[in-house]
Amino acid sequence: MIEWPVLFRALAVFFVAASTASAENPSALFDAHGCRSCHKIGARGGNSGPDLTMVGHRRPRPWLERWLASPRASRHDAMMPEQGLGDRDRAALAEFLSEQKGQAWGGARPWKASGDGRVIYARAGCVACHGPAGRGGHPNPGGRGGMIPRLGPLLATYRKDELVSKLKRGAVADAEDGRVAAVDMPAWGGVLSDTELGALADYLLTLAEKDPEDDF
Image (tube, rainbow, N blue to C red; front, top):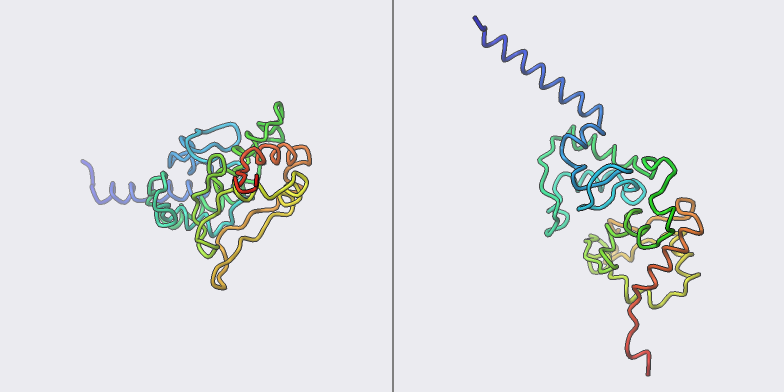
């Protein structure tokens, strides 16, 4: 005969142990919550969400934890569903993601064969902030206009060498009303090679939007 109180206690111990094991193995937790069905880390994962292989270079841990708490609180039109993560799992996932700085590629970056700046833009994660083809749309609380700006008009003001230099050193976002912007552009010097930066700059310059008035 089953002693239900004993069984309930055993199940409670089992689920607590499972939760602890998950939090202590955040890579497995990433899989268990279905993150990999949309997001790629290294060679594994889907393509419907941003590649997260270098997300730790682009985003600090506190930002990641806020996003995981509620994507739609950060961006009202976020495609990522609300996860309902507990504090422990959310903290473990944020820590795991903050550590992702390209090591999952094992040195074999996915654009090596082609040197294609478009692939670098997508796989290094530039698209996550600047949007497809630099169209923008990512919120940046505290930044000017509250958004990461559209790239087209800005790129029209750069020569290639100037753009490569900016990519190398990164940029602090223009703040608004004395606040600190939530998102800055990271420095890619030492992360991407000069060849990769050149290829990325070549692609970005194809997105430049020239003001028709410049022709007069």
